[in-house]
Image (cartoon, rainbow, N blue to C red):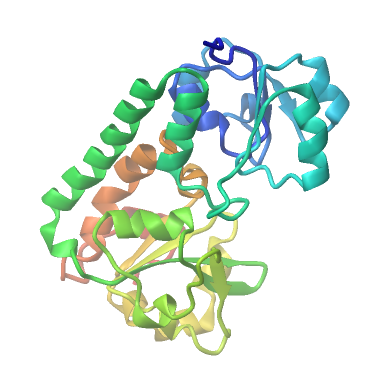
Length: 292
């Protein structure tokens, strides 16, 4: 029986999260965004410990990957080309997304289980997945009134406003909590689509029982000043939640480690936003300047 992989290069922009959750410290990680050491965000820093992986930025350097002498290359969520895959396969076995998924569309649970099998830690991967699913189930039990309500994860940056849709991790986060997209947003969702820009003159598709803005505090003044946002009932009735900074990143990573972090940080605000009383303060919306 072949020995489980020991020297893992993580080329996926988020694949180091499930590897670290499994106790596998990659010899190299792919930097996505943010200024945290080694490209590892707060929810995974404990698992990183004192490891010092190489940080790969920009285009994948085949020479640099080869110099690390890996016995497994994780390219799920890396967006590599067929030509790159061919070269990388000469260095070490390469894991890529399944044919049924888009390049960046592997669900967090499937990625965790796949990496568990590849590293000889399937039982641990199954426990991790079960733990996250239980966390969402517990949240749904704490808030049974959320079931069937509409919720939209939205963005606003560089003058564009839109909704996260379909299999996107930010959209799926709300589904895991019992929400469903508005009919208008559901109509925008394709199998492999992640977001849909909206006309600046009509933001009504965003007007659900809950409106979760996933952005950054640097862009919140632009969002506050967005004229058509004021036409939304969710805005006027205080049903907005703002996920900025680390929480926005946690939702964007959508990993076995970041999802519980996001749930812990957003649950109270979501409850406050849709408790039926517009006067209930929503801390994140107030901090971002969105509170009515």
